[in-house]
Length: 638
Image 1 (tube, rainbow, N blue to C red):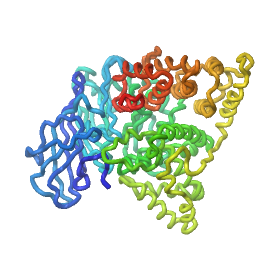
Image 2: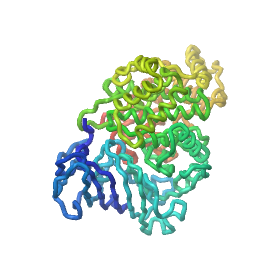
Image 3: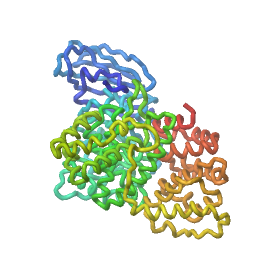
Image 4: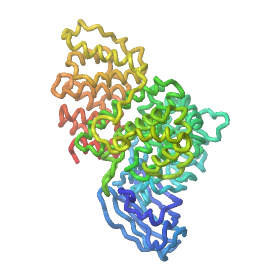
């Protein structure tokens, strides 16, 4: 079946290379230029090309250098408008053709967020960044916006601010003077990039702002480089946070799944309105500033994003129905690396935290049970963002962990993982192709015994099961979680003591815990009925959770104190949470990452709907367009 979110005719003819020429206009907030496609016919009798577009101003089209007839058709609320271009001749399978489209983006471009200088760390220059996953590349350029199509791309981008793309920089050099030695904010510089590895359109990315580069130490024997981009004000913190582990993670991953193909692995620390913890754009992972915890406790996100170089960017899902292949595999591998670099207990702790997030996601979709499935058969034109949650990450990774255990452990499973990568690298595949390869591999490497083990898995329940539980009860190493759980259980038992002064808790209770153990403590507390308000006030007084700078802990604290909407604690902390989520708490930093802003807004909404709505309305333009749209849905505004 064709991709249900694309109107393009990619099954008939598909782009093999895209050449972009852009000029970035910061004052009027648009990108103007051209997209030149080299396309190859996939069947005989092709007489038109259809591209996906959304909110683009198409100025002209040329086919093989000659002006061509075109039309925008089929405007759709989710999929945008289809750009139909007539071909001067009918193509046969295997033949190629070049199409040049001049256009510019518009104010309704979903892929781009334009930030005022006040929204940046330095507050001197504006900032621009893109987010094209899952279906927003069509608002950045006319493309066949489906992961079924993989293309190489090159770009020339003219800008008065430094420009970064999800590709290898050709000029000016990354390690040379910023902005090629020209005056930032005044002089135009043309940045040249090339991406020789075929990628899906959702991985085309741009960022522009007052950023600098600092390379990480070169790893012996590696031909790839790695470093970090950030605003000057954040560079010291960003380099410290990521320099110790990033190259170590990538080198460890190569030992499991093979050579890194993209040549460059850099990180870009974005302004706080970035809606995700990270985005796996090739050569340049975007990461949220909330990862700068000062203790390297959140670098797992970097493991996740670089792992996408193999699972997602390398082996890609054919469409949103099979999105779990990207995120389930990546989450499994992220935790596997934690085991190999640290211990099984560290993998277990991460799984425990993930299990809690899965519970919340499944509960969120109690009224839309098909979004609880691993494989979601999206209707034509359905927005896959509405189903976005931790389900594909957690249910998917648990399925793969379950296979690892059923098949005989890591010694038996890791050779299969390597073969999976070798077999499908560079392709876009379905769940059925993945499963068929799994069976073929173990039929050849274990015979009937391994096939019987695989047959013991209830595949239908994993793929299409709904409800609040996994098909099997998963057990994880509890070593690092034990202390956190015991503290939570002590607090739960303390509700019987109404006199707070008689409680024996101390502020030092959590001092010996690392950041993840503290998360487990708070999440374990959430599994019990709400503590009395007096206890919650006392807990906060001891552990200073309502003032912690850790967004991960602050999120869990608000999720702990806000559910009982009529309690004194909920009424007290809801206004504070509202100030925190939009940055009116003295920091000036909004919590644009959807992991934080969406659940906090939902929690405030249950306590005081008007407070949630008015807080959001006053600051809605500070949020990324994707986050804004989904928060509106959460608050029943859309």
